[in-house]
Every structure is written in C-alpha cells, then in structure tokens.
View 1 (cartoon, rainbow, N blue to C red):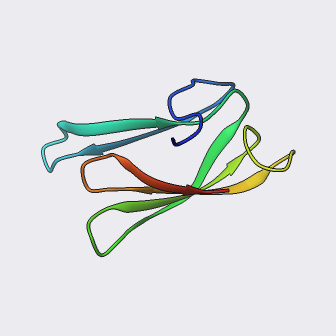
View 2 (cartoon, helix red, strand yellow; view 1 turned 135 degrees about the vertical axis):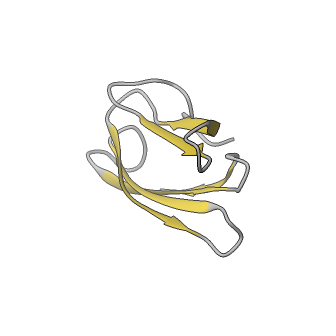
View 3 (cartoon, rainbow, N blue to C red; view 1 turned 90 degrees about the vertical axis):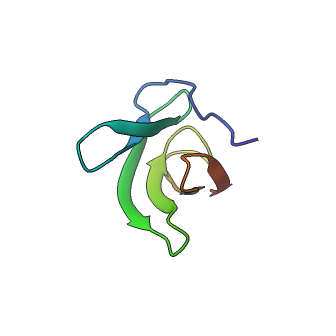
Length: 81
C-alpha cells in the first residue's frame, strides 16, 4: 500500500518519535531498494507529520521528490511521488 516502506535498501529513512524523557513511542522505516533521504519534517495540525524526501527508489528515475504523511501513531496515511 505504501510501496517500499521497510524494505531496507541502500539507504532508508528511520523516523522515530520519543517522549519528553527520551523513551521511544514508535518508529517507522521508509524506503525502497535504492537511496532515500529525508530532507525536511513538519508537524501537522492533527499531530501527525509530513516528511519531504528525495528518492532513487520510486518515481520516474533518478532522484525524485517524495512526500509521506505519518499519523500521530506513526502509521503512514498517504504517499505522493
């Protein structure tokens, strides 16, 4: 459904959330078989996150822009390449 999440390729994105004491609440790994890099993260009004990434794993070839929306529980909601 979210193409490649957790495939552990050449380089992937590990996004994790911790609480105020540094204890991990959740984590999600994003990426495919090639290089994927997170360039920016913003928190959304619904306490989720949007990650702006570059990907060599998906898209038209070469390096493409990749947006992923993660909900407040760490579950991917949508992806746009």
